[in-house]
Length: 70
Image (cartoon, rainbow, N blue to C red):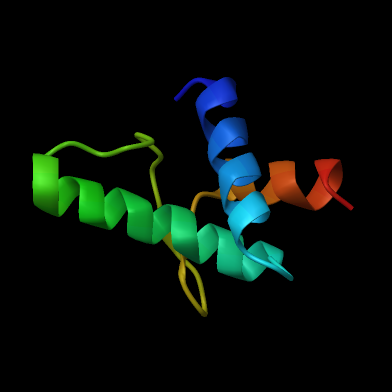
């Protein structure tokens, strides 16, 4: 997935949602992909998810958010 697409998605969500924490953002991006698959049979972001303790997460995106948006 192009970085610009995920960054624009993050900007959009952060402009619409107050107090957008990393966990909520990760969940929203995951749900965006799930809804996109149900409606169009194609993922929005083409990210590969791994099951972590609380939610499915793309590890690259998690680390990107952890170190670039503090």
